[in-house]
Length: 311
Image (cartoon, rainbow, N blue to C red):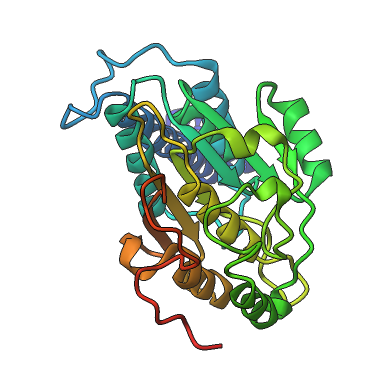
């Protein structure tokens, strides 16, 4: 029969049912990758061209190996990272803006940027300050070695912390009792015996006038973790002991992450001072601390407001 000869048999292969789902996952991955790449590239180009209201891809400088390294790093970590300790987009924008202002108001050569903690954002910080000097401090020697091998050019040093979060109250009381001695705000920490001071860093760390200090380490999530008491105290002393000779910038921008936690909150109030807090974004506190230089009366007080947090 003619009708029978025109009959067609259609077979559905099982793989056909899987293709739409595969395409959806591919589209989702592509969208995530390019969204992340666009965000990071926008952050970088905004830092390079602060006068422009919107970054232009045509006018952007050629992408440096640092920028490319950061993009690849974030793209690889985006899908499987579940860490809750990473900086938010708003916090990263605040860090970027601080570094950008440093470059604009300075010589254009970039910032002297000191970072406590090796984190997911390490490569981004180096990229943002690619024309300056960026130094990282971390308590995990094995992590420093791995990062240096994977990303040549990283300048990082290990720190031996002798404090614990559970000792917070005792350490603050001890520092107050010794505020006219080894725990004073202006000093050479290399010769300090203050329990909160870091005195075993490479010598040049104490000699550099730091423009920006970012504190996102060491770990402070448990009572036995080192906590950031020493990092905050050391940053405060470095800022107040700044030389700034020859008309240099006398102020230091100090950014403290996890300011909602007790250690970060109390130590920031004690040594960075509430009157120096210029911005708070999510869990990031931005302090601007001026040096205590020549011609100023010698004092044992870190803050002009003498009312210290109760312990």
